[in-house]
Image (cartoon, rainbow, N blue to C red; front, side, top):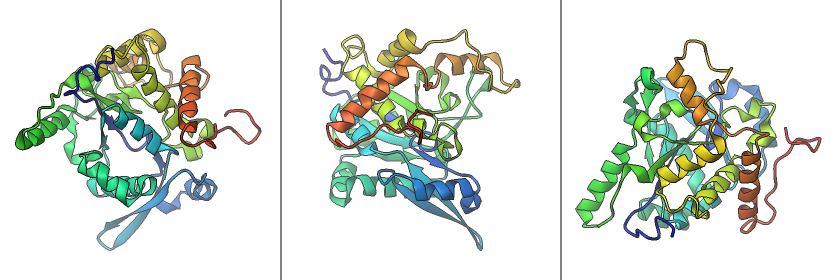
Length: 306
């Protein structure tokens, strides 16, 4: 039996990074011609917005392009009883603006208000980061998910609710494993879309929403995994389909220690030519097409996935 349907007072928590997981953005403001050019070419289903950052008398503008069909991903997880959070190392003003605009675009005012009243889409930002320990594979800063559980627990105590929260029921969706606290692994590695606008694999990376939908469906709809709590089930998926500890990623800087290299190889990012990645994308787009029949697989202009 599904773990969460059997325990109705327990909810899975999904904590999404923003940059590189849900959107691509640049770090040079409007001076980056690559991103400006691609905003004009962005499919209409990709929400776009510009965040203006004011510093004394200067203003810098930062375009953001979000993945398509994120409402379908969020709705799937919410319908499974989940709560969705965002946790980005960006400043709070930026995070609140771009996520607020995204949610307003994909849901509309009335539906968004309903979801916010249900305590969906709480945002954590730069000031919530904790110091990490590089010796054990953590980054300089980490996203400790216990503070999310503590906040939810205290809120429910005040209103007399009976929900139970455990660290095994919360997971981080990240493109950089080192943001995870080492006792809170695994993370769900997303397709890294941080620089898709300048990538030779731009069209493949735009399928990132499909991959995440397929991945979570693989857990929730599969009796081999859904009898386990969220963290244990996803750990089992990695062990059975994506575990490559013996492969040391050549792109990692030499200064990084063995613990960090091993971490990146164990929880590896989805790869374009990997059969499991292809399977997740295929299942994800099939699910999206039940709501949006015209949803398309993004491929290069010459017809081949790049």
